[in-house]
Length: 233
Image: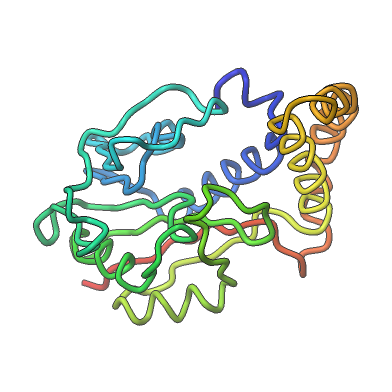
């Protein structure tokens, strides 16, 4: 994360996601080449220390998130992408693929997973993350929330095996994220609501940091997920 990320209304969810990704990479290390689909600023590139060729693709007007250090795509989706949903790469072009916070925005998740599976070499991994209980964002392109059961079915349909799926946080993390998220929304609204949000924010920021050791409590309620899938072979 960038220095701003440590004081972000979404510090807790970002921190938990990256902590869970580190855990996933211990179980399923990545080496060689990797394509980051919907990469934005490539926010988790630094976690993939074994990757020697890390490339990303996104729309020309991709979302800028100030919580992460600056980065940019290497490739732009072709002009017909939203009609074909086909990645502009040959089969088995990369050792691995990632799609972080992407599948909830894709109108055809089965097609998206099939394309990720196609461009990965046999034996390669597909690393995913997605929110579950989280404010609407990037509207009107916020379509889905998936349980781990739903993702397992989607993976099977794409010919991928589930290596592991992890919940990033439970009830404590969800409550904190929804509260600080509402403050962020109020801040963006402007006017008197912004002044109230700015006045209320410091104690909530402190609470986010204090709640890190307790974020797993209430695991039946899920903040977000991280998954690793594998193309057989």
